Length: 531
Image 1: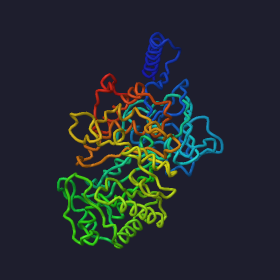
Image 2: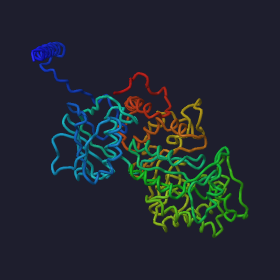
Image 3: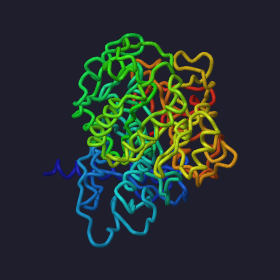
Image 4: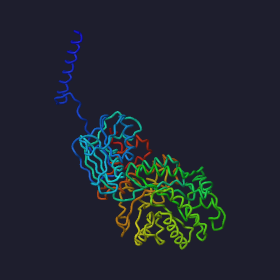
């Protein structure tokens, strides 16, 4: 007992000595650990929100943090919660949302106070975080902002022993354009289901909401059509350079659609026609005017193929393809191509594109076509993807149709950054990171303004891409800029401030093992990894 008393006294003496030293050093009157702090300037928000107001304080996620999530949002928030548990290592508890907001905790709920379909409101104080939106899609977009407000370690697939701090802030945000997309060409070189899912994750992180899949071209047919099995039996058997090619079964395509849906991204499938059709012409002789199958094609030239416009079987073929694809695709649009059909006579092209639009409508879908489609009479709901000629864009607007802006010289992600870029093409020019970011879709063509624009899309063509590392190199970091063009108000975008925000994303790229282009336009090196 005597020994015990001595130990206690010794321990108390030691404790008070430590406290005294702490008072002297820290200038405080307590030995409790100070609350960690983080400033908003230490984080990087891309796309930039409509309104951001820094507040005093810091919200910290600890093992004791309580999460209150509305029941209808459990699925919407599941991926975020999984990511948070993995990164923090905490056994976080999700509680039902009570009738009134708790004074402390992480709160996610639907609210009529947010007017816009994909808009959200976020308020973070030292005591709580409240995220609200009118729709689950808005909640999902808001969660991407929360991820960017968290330390970079949130994107790692392993636990990080750091303080999980979010700066106090109030954000109100919503998108500029309804359609904000990226395209992946899986026809020139085939990419697996897992590759496509990774691409979906990349664009979802920056609030894009459409993935345009270029499923067919001269080099390959990549979607199973059960009524025309040789499209994949023969048409999918190769790719650029002579590789083995590949295709998605209908079940695999549905898997991609579902994966995208869970991230509030709509798949827009494309069947390019009447040109860019050699894979189909090689599969079925009867689709050719001379009744002879063409040879499979593995080069990268364009404009040499066309369906036979005068044959009834051509339209039976198109009807079957659109019918099966429409049944697999919950989104409202199917892309029917129409570009670079140089081997189709102009009057035949017009006839065909008008018929293809109607076939698409017959199966309950709306058509999208590359800008050459505006030479034909357009159905009211048809969208025109402006990639090449200003006069085509003007013709579409003159018919009362809206545009998806994908001007090749600004938005084509397969264009090289500079003359030394080892992959990519340069026929539309070189597109460095500033060129890809610093433009306004509503100012490209005189007489066309934001009211004429449905959205923005950044296509990635696949002639030179053989792996996901190639894909990453060409889309990162440009994809972030295209996402901001589609989401953020043009008045809030500025290259000088954007490149500073972009520089702060590099640690996330590193943690995700993304093969990004380290452009000299951005001062990546001056920034240390963010905690």
